[in-house]
Image (cartoon, rainbow, N blue to C red; front, top):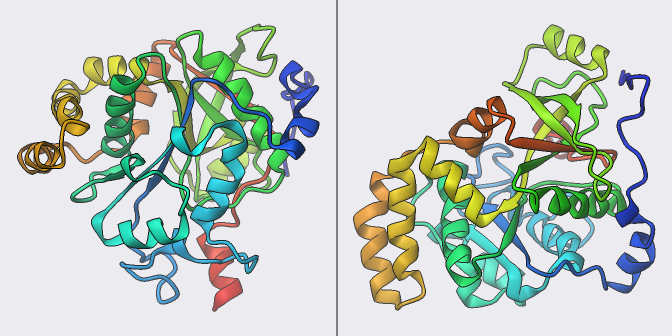
Length: 318
């Protein structure tokens, strides 16, 4: 059950008036928008179908001829370009990703020596991209999402970019279809009132994955959305937040980024010296939650559907 509050959370965006035609033509590029695809995972969530060296995002779980990371690429490329699309992955997956994404530029495949959770992965991309383009706006989207309603998804991302321009860390809230215990939840706050982003609201708070009764109570209010971990922001703002809330992690990532494009040898030395010292923490805990408490995080409530979840996939594949 999903209950909407009296004032509908999702209104047609002015960005969407031309969206359907633009998407069909593949011409909805957003200048200065960079896509970051964190491609982590140990391959355990769909074991034995997925393995450590062949995790879920490399599988064609929808049986449509494209793996999940390929589908993520296909879904986002209308908004950007191969030159502005990056993937952050571990060494065990680099070869497979290059095979599956031949359009991905070599210098846009960031190899992290070991798993450090989403903050280090996204923060590394932000630090490197901020040096390449100080005005970069980045959007982070997991490699293993399955999305239904691509047009609504693209409109939500475009709206999130408009909000990010106003110096917010922006997330995209998914309309809950049932009281899931597999997602965290976003409590919607007051409307921002931006003409270019009529759906955008402040994030009142983030909630950890709840039990079934709590999830049902959230949905009954109509003011909660699923948190699927999609974030859009200025790369420079993300680094500012990271410096404020996690200064040691910020210092380490900046040190790596300073030499990232200098040479492969310099990059390898910096990774060897710094990466193992970085804190392992999700982006939600590192910056999103404390920033939300200060009114610095916005959410674009969206109407598209997201993936079935591991339990449903296990039902499909046995």
